[in-house]
Image (cartoon, rainbow, N blue to C red; front, side):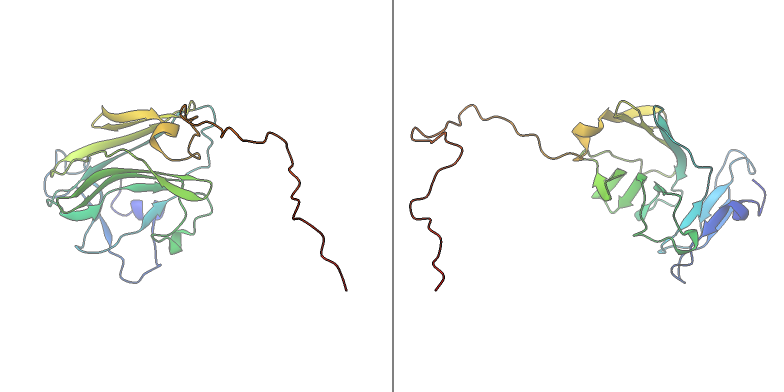
Length: 209
């Protein structure tokens, strides 16, 4: 990736004037000074919004794979390293936290209590969170995060190519209305009337005077 070539593909949002700035860097430690370069946040305690377009595609009858690496080299205590897959209608110059997205995936750290991998799917206009708690890595090294969505409505989450979660979308997201389970203890009262309609003897039409 050339020194400035990445800026032609990646667009920084102008929604807020105080968004943090991204830079190209291999970080404080690396294996190869050039090959290990990546997009890095350059200012503490800032919000960031950066996006890149790619050719439209369909994952119908195919597996969809989201994969990227994250390095929190400064022992981060609060921040998100997740990515979002947006629809093509996104206005990149005005992208912000409430912009509609299809998938949100990646690590989020906030103090000792929140160290999780977000997997959020947009279903019928609603952002639905996974109901499993997946712990993310909280050290200072590079980690590979992978989300696989398969055409049989199953998924898999991997960290450093090791499976950490997986299963059926219907089981691990509240995408469908709750299933109605017949209660074996439930019975109709003995005086239940099976007629489809019961005439009310008190039901009369009002008189018009």
